[in-house]
View 1 (cartoon, rainbow, N blue to C red):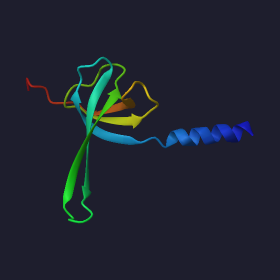
View 2: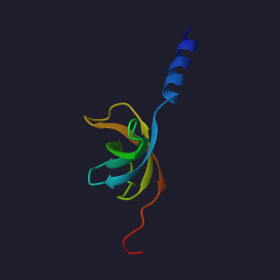
View 3: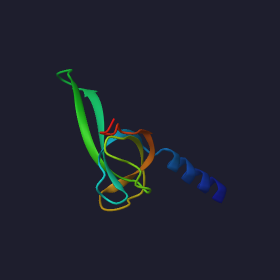
Length: 98
């Protein structure tokens, strides 16, 4: 019976939300502010609307810089507002010296 229970717990963990966003703030220790943009069609007026949501994500090695495109994954609560972790950096920001 315990094998089935363990299998159910693993299956639940596999379905974590994954989002792609841009780092808009990196001033905190081990935390980055990520802007996630989604587009949807307004149900009545049929216009495409862009909605931006800013979240706090945990960055263990402090690798992320402003402008990086990152992939974040849902996690357990890490602090009052931090519920996401940086899974990977998809593309690094262009530096100002280029």
